[in-house]
Length: 130
Image 1 (cartoon, helix red, strand yellow):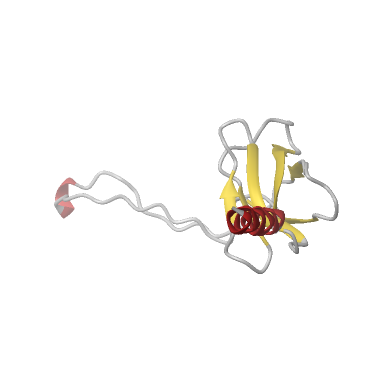
Image 2 (tube, helix red, strand yellow):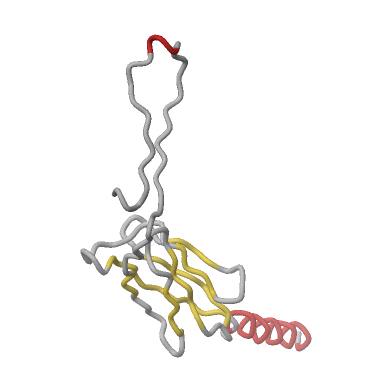
C-alpha cells in the first residue's frame, strides 16, 4: 500500500511540474484606425513555431512555455508588433496600418478577341501619373 501511495505522490508531483512549464496568455487585438476587433491576426512566440490566430472578435488564447519572453503580432497590411510577456497573462494590442508604396499597378484582362473586334484600350500608367 505504501508503494502505491508513493507512486501516486511521484505522479502528482511530476504532473505539477509538467503543467507548471506552460502558462496561458489571453487578450484581444484591435485596429488603431477604428478600434474594432481584428479576426485572423497571427500571434506567435518569438523564436518558436508556437502560435495561434485571433477569432472573429479579435480575441485569442495561447499556451506559452514558462521561459517565453516575446509575442509577435502580425497581419497583412498592418505593422508587425512585438510585445514582451513579462508577468502578464493578458496582453491587448492595437495594430497600426502599414502604408505600402506601390510603384506600379497592372490590370490584365484575359479573353479571346479577334483583332478587328477589339474595342477597348490598352495603356500603361506609372507612379508619377497616379
